[in-house]
Amino acid sequence: MNVSAIVRHCLQLSGWICLGLVFSRPANAEDIKIPDSLPAEVVAAFEAAKTTKLYSLEPTGEMLPQHERLHNERVLGETTLTWEQTATAFRLIKKGVAEGHDRLAFCFAPRHALRVTTREHHYDLVICFECVRVDVYRDQERLSSVGLTASPEYFNSLLKAGRVPLSDSSYEMEEKERNFFAEGKARWLAGMPESIRPVWAAWQAEGEKRDLKKLQVLLAKQFPKAENRILALFTWYAQDDDWASDLHYASAPELMLEEYGDADFVTVGQRDDFTTAQLEGAARFLVGWPTSRLAVLPAKLKQKLLVHVTNQKDARKSAWARHAFGAR
Image (cartoon, rainbow, N blue to C red):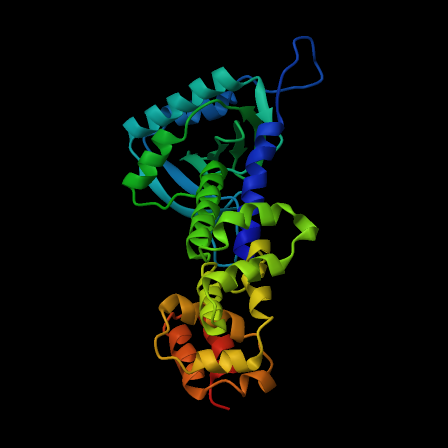
């Protein structure tokens, strides 16, 4: 799994952890101390403020030395709020604390922060709306953590108005993840040979008992000529365009292609009517061949594959293609 995929899964996991670790104050429990309000000095500072700063934070992803930080969270940007905006934002926070003071999460992935500066101090409210929690700071000292029930909608609107980028919430990332895989599945099914499509779900459900011969027989009925079967498999294999993908179902066309001999690929390589999808699938499959096998392929096929891949301007794919199909 590549790094971006790992990050997406971590984000998804963090969202569910937040849901699972929010606790409420038991009716007769004195050992769990959740503050029921913001510290008085913080309230006084914000209510007297003429302006404040609203920050957009990124709680996940890579943190580099050049990135600005606020309480060890990466800052995506900031905007200055007017007195009216400050008053509204702080009123929403106080209301959220009053309604959510008996709820607090152990997780914390803040995407917003509000700062007021007095002559003596900075006071920061570092907010995770998903984790129903605000961490309260005086300068670098954390004064308390307070429960919060509120929506980030107003704060996001202020950031957008100030042209400040927003961090995706874990719920938004989860939705993008679902859409990403749904789109990929639809694309995969659309590129699958028609003869295989009706049995695909049942074949997958067989697990370790899956037999590629079943798929090969069906494909041969649809395409009696070997070269046409190879082209159909190239088209199918192209539908998952991440060559480093570890999606288990992508192995079916790859394993089916491996059953053909070099002579079959030489025959296919003589053609001049490759579609874009066929070139993509061919490049993805053939780039993994050893040098001895690549040497038997027609030069014009290797040139077509090299041009196809390098025109995509994907540095990783281009490097692989130059190594496999470039002049030696």
